[in-house]
Length: 283
Ligand SMILES: C[S@@+](CC[C@H](N)C(=O)[O-])C[C@H]1O[C@@H](n2cnc3c(N)ncnc32)[C@H](O)[C@@H]1O
Image (cartoon, rainbow, N blue to C red; front, top):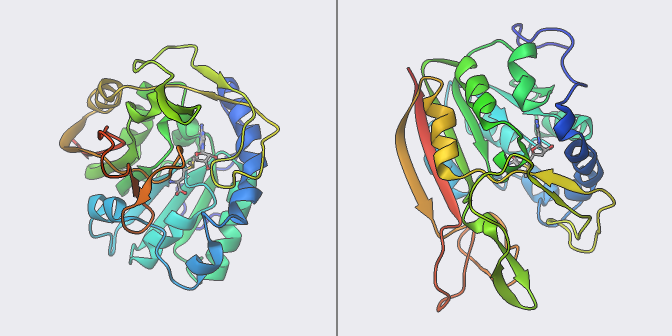
C-alpha cells in the first residue's frame, strides 16, 4: 500500500548489477541482526533509543518534519525518528528481507501510520520515489556499499526540498583502512577510492560473530573528498563537518563503550578518526 502518494508504482526488485552480491549478503544477515544482542530489538520495543548521541545531535529537531532515511536496514532508526516526533519518515533499503522486517517492527512500535518503507537500490530511488523531504538522513555503514557516489549525491539532491537538510554520520574512511591482524591493528586497505572496489570473503558477521556468512561482499572505499564532491556537484552546500574518535561498533574487540551505542579506543592507544559527520543544505 502506498501511504504517501508520490511513490511511483514498480519500486523494488532492480538493483545495480555491481550491488547484487551485497544484496545477497544483506538478505542473508538481516535475520541474524534482528535476533542479535547488538541490535537488541526487545529493548528497542520497550523504548530504548536506536540513535546515538552523534546521530541525535546532527539530526537535530525532527518534530513535524518529513524525513527520508537512506539504507534503513530493518527500520530501527527510521522508527526512532518517528518516535522523536517526525511528521512522517520514509525508510529505504534494497533488501526485501530487511523491508519486510521493518514493516513488522513499525506495526509493533505503533508508528506505522507515520512510517513508510520502500524497497529500492538507493542509487535508483528517484526513479520510484519523487516526494521531496525536509531532511535526508543516513548513518553508520552506508557509503561503502555504493558503487557510484556522484549518483548518490544526485539522488539526495533530487529528493530534498529547497533549503532541505542532508545529514550523514558515517564510519570514517581512515578507520576503514584498518583491520585486526594477529592481535594488532594493521593498515590493510588504501585510503583512496578505486573503481573496482574490493571483494571481502565470507567472514563472521559484525553483529553476531558466532554466525559466519555464506556470501561475500563487494565494497568501495570513498575518501572525504569524494563525499564532499558528490554533494557539492549537486547543489548541496556543506554547512557543517566534524570528525570523531568514536564508532558505532567495535571491529577490533578492544574498544571501550563511550555512551549508548558508541565505542572508542582504550586510553593510551593513539587516536585515529573513526567517524565523521556532514550537514549540507539544498540550494
Ligand atoms: C549497516 S546498515 C545501515 C544501518 C543503519 N544505520 C540503520 O539504521 O540501522 C547498511 C544497510 O544498507 C543497505 N544497502 C546496501 N547497499 C544498498 C543499496 N545499494 N541500496 C539500498 N540499500 C543498500 C543494506 O541492506 C543495509 O540494510
